[in-house]
Image 1 (tube, rainbow, N blue to C red):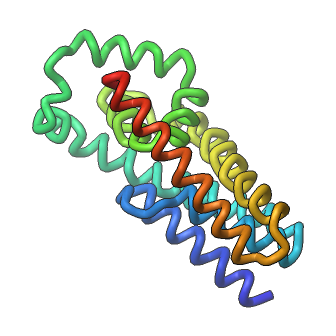
Image 2 (image 1 turned 180 degrees about the horizontal axis):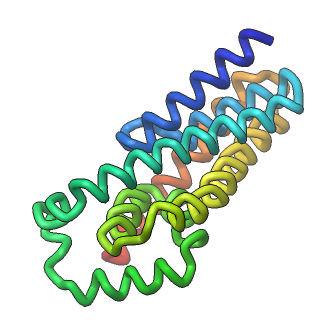
Image 3 (image 1 turned 45 degrees about the horizontal axis):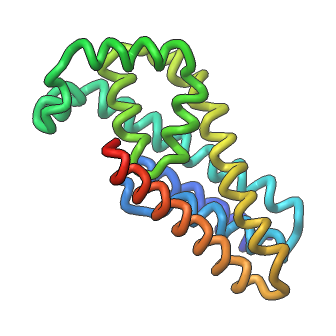
Length: 185
């Protein structure tokens, strides 16, 4: 049991870190943990989802805070604030569908940071962000744990399920990246 707690704590830290510095494949980590949990004890999958969602939430909160503090300077450096009307339009859409926008930004590789930056620059207050981000992080963790359970259920050995889960996540990320580049998004 203490081994499972250590793994879940590591998953939480890894996802939180990866949410702040998006160099860690957080979705693959949740999928791999869920694939392993499928072969260990089915109830552990719930804890994998909770650890992944909590890590994502904490990481997003830190990233949102950093965007609120230094986001405008970052946006100007990236020449992202060339058009104030564009920011206003994005902000209006975000206010209408906060949860769905945050969820989609978590699922689309490279989409989360620009959305968090936009929300911060638009002045979305902390309480609204906190309320909208909680279900988005939970749904994100369920989706990626689902990939892991799928991989774990197909193969008899845990390592095979982990491998398939990671391959699924990487493949989806690559496909989305190619589609975004081709569409000019």
